[in-house]
Structure formats: structure tokens, C-alpha cells
Image (cartoon, rainbow, N blue to C red):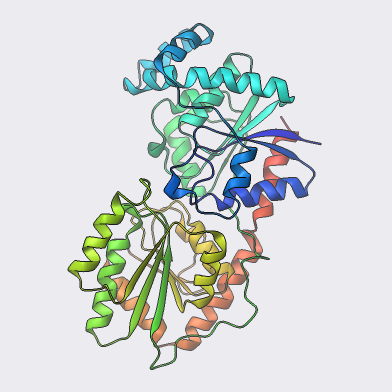
Length: 397
């Protein structure tokens, strides 16, 4: 039986259903993942029906104070850190100091549990913890890159240099990674997209497009964040309504502050555009509610300004809902415009509104895209593929 540490920051957060699915897939294959995390998520982001069970299984490496950091400093690889620090902002040394006690805790946990490998689903502070632990005699580790490297803080060379292997969710990101880190990239790096549970995310009845006089039901799902483009979707909805089309929009997801951050900006924008009667913000919801909303929707839209790939698009496609996304990042590695979905330029509410209207007025096209999208997910984006890749990587370590 393969026993591995499975380290995810702030687990289980609102977007972490993918990790929970992968954990289940690992267990189906006879592996024993031991769940690890940095800190608990904010209360407003604990939304899943499995969240309490996940937290009960998770060891949290904790918020670290400076006294604990000082006690862990002697175990650090000082010479290597100082070499890296010459090319890094001061935040790198601060991050190292704060991560050092967690690295010592990780070493103890792995020794007690007989864990020789930890997989880190992040390249931020969690990756630094694993990298420091390895240099202090702790377990081997591997990484998954889920988005642009710049999102994950300084010290990337240090984090990647001793990783046994890595997975990257798109070829687009892998090309960027190699350009940025060169020889610090491990020899074994695999492109492995995130996946979804295609058995659960399916429909019992065929997809039905909106009838001519029916209210067009639009759905989007994602963290409430400027880069997700919700504000553009609101403007697109206003354009549709002003053109005489009946439509409503449901938004699932919450901001990182648990409802006191960017959500308030969106609520103000809803009021400015006189959309209170046409928009619902659900907040953080569990996977069951996401599926219910997908099956009720005529169209799914993800209007991101930047998107590494788009698990929310995968979920919609798996449920046989036609999708409209933005041509940014690696989204085109998931959605082929006109074949299994529609892509428009980011930050373009007019293009969004036109794409929505075009699909609403072409029910046959909407049905074809829905069927092709489902086929696309079945062929390449099942959650089991990630588990298989991870276990194969560990076996070769």
C-alpha cells in the first residue's frame, strides 16, 4: 500500500472539491493519503457536506509565531537559502523563517506515520514547508502547479530544485515554468489537468435549451474575485435585458474573506446596474448545490480575466451544459471554440452578451456543444487520471 502525505493549503476551502475527489480516487487504488494542511479555511468558506469529515482527518501545521521560527532556524540550509536570497525580494527570507517550524512538524508527522513522500498541491508556502523539510532530512516531495508561477510568491527555484517530480495542469503553464526556472525544474514533469467525477457530474435527462419565451437561466461558479470577471458578466446581462431578452444569473462562490471582501463590490455593482431582480449570489455552496444549479442552467459562463484551466468549466461540460469561457491561459486546452464550447476575449462584456444571445437563439448549436463538451471531459478530464499520475510518479521516485 502506498502511504503518502497529501498537503493542501487552507484545506478544505470552497474550491477544493477537486482535491477531495482525488483523495477518493487514491483510496480506490489502494493508496493511503494522510491529509495535511497549513491552516483551516475561514469559517465562511467551509461549505461542503464533507468539510467536517475532511478537517477531522487533517493535520494542520499551524500559524507560526516568531519565537517558534527562531527555534527552528538551526535546521535550515543556510548557505543555499542565502544564495537564493540574493536573487529574491526580502519576503523570501521572511517566508523561510515562518515556514521552518511547520517543516519540523511535517518531519515529525511523517516519521511517526511512516510517510516517505509528500505531494504538495501548491507552489506557495506549503511548497516551501515541504522543501525545507526535505533539506532537513524529511520526506521526498512533489508539487503540482495550478496557476501562473508569479501567484505563488518568491523562492520558486528553492521550492522546485529538490522536488522528486511535478505535475502541471496545462502545457501553457509548463512552458512558462521552464522559461522561468530553467535547470531548477525537476527532470520528471508531467502535464496532468485537474479532473472531475464524471459519474457524479452527469444528467439523467437530456439537456434542454431555453424555449423562445422562457427566461434564459445563466450560471457561473468561482471565487468572488476581480480576476474571475463577474463584473463583466453583470454588464453582459444588463445588455441582454436592455435588448429585450428575459434572463437571470446565478453566481455561486464567495470571496476569500468569507463574504466581507469583493462580494460587497459585486453587490454594489448589481445595484448600480439595477439587476437586483435578475441576479442571485449564493455564496459558498457544496458540490450538490453546484450540480443542481448546473442541471437547471441553460448556459454556463466563466468570464475570467485570467484562468489557468477552469475546473468550473469542466464541471459544467461534464453535466452536459453548453459553456462560454474566455480565451486566456490554458482554457483553450480544455475548450475548443465552436466544437465543445465558445471562447471570447476576456474583459469584453459585449462579446459575452453576443455569445450568450447567439447560443440562446440557436438551440441546435447549444445542444451540440453540450454533447461535445461532455465527450471532451469523458475522454481526458476524469479525476482518476490525476490519482494515477501521482501514484506512478511516487512509484518511480
